[in-house]
Length: 142
Image 1: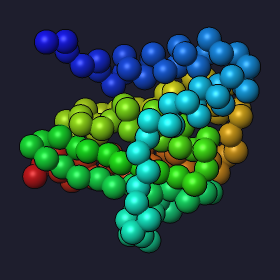
Image 2: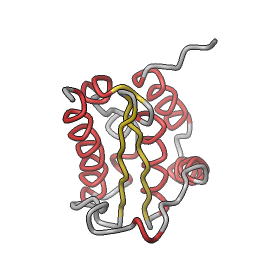
Image 3: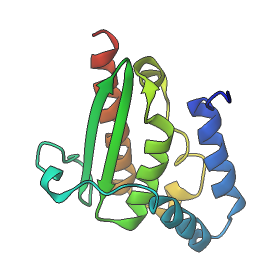
């Protein structure tokens, strides 16, 4: 049985892929491609309670815990944000709470994404990660 990559190692593969694509248009296409695998959150679950505040575009986050693992679903109206959410979901979905709490995001800071997205969107993505980590932190001790 193959062991899952750590969050850090998986994130490094995304960063390597993005950094190999030195053209912003190619990076954008890459994010669009991986966002196609991200399931949409049904409209009836796109509630105010599930909305991530602090994001420039609509972003919804569904979090659950089962048997010590945190499950993450995320969606956005904005395609570029959906791509970034796809990375976050890939990195954090199904992980143990302590892994998520200890995670320090690097994939935006250490790629061209930081220079290509607005400050509001940058902060919004970090708000998504913070919400996931806060949820994991509450479940960690439960």
